[in-house]
View 1 (cartoon, one colour):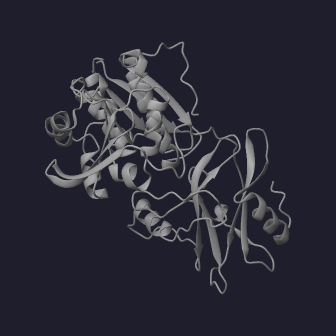
View 2 (cartoon, rainbow, N blue to C red):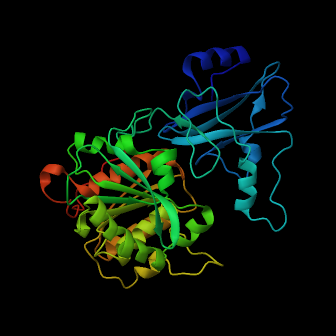
Length: 403
């Protein structure tokens, strides 16, 4: 457990090490100590830790910090995997967290609870904000793989253009990024769902700038705004209408206006959560338009009652393999969808598709997706000096770990 023995000891270590404090644990784990400092005169009587993939929202008492005697510091030590990386924050409250009210869904209840989430002021890393949710701090354990594409605090070197364009009958922002090293014509394409996150909230442009530096083919990156949760839940889960807008409207426009390639093998689509589901659906249903999909923590649990629609698993039951390729990743600490991601991986491979798959030590979290999106795109696009996209990966060649 933590070596912190007093408020004075804690203050001293936090000043030197920053938060969270990390101490040895049993093999494969470390003990992470999280600390929250109450403002002067604060009426807070309860503080809870919310850590992606680590804490269980259904058991708030297990995540409760304790106040140190004669101190404004609240602390909680938790054993976590030594490879874990994730977003976290604190829930300071006057009243304890109560169970959902009668007739309230768990998600509605939890959205209300985390509205009070605050970041860790003792953590030196930049905070992460996405999808209109409260900002979170980032925790990185000693064994967490280095994110070789993501860089904090670096300005992009390419050109970003924001356009307002009607797509699927909705006027929305579409961001187009031209990274350094992109070709003048016949450009590969990467279409990204939840584009506001990728373009503005957690901008991936600096990571994309590294593609040419490392010898990879450089795509035109097109990021589509999902507008709001309601529209997102209509368009991204296997919508034939939205897919028709991509193939019949967006792709022709990109070829005409942005010199995008007409070769489907060099047109990728990618996203996370619902976006991963949408990317997989697009590459399955329209292989003559999309030759590759990057699916990160795909919501392959969809649909559940009362939702209507055919799941990816059902669509694969009698699907013949096409030339579409799939690069998938999911979190080991995503209990609500990890098994479904493994199931889709196995079904794709059984039908003869080219699939690369990996798991990361984390939850449903942009802290991982921001790097994995570029990792997957780079793998599917292949090397610039190869003269073609990557072919099928032999089963004897292991997928490299997240790095």
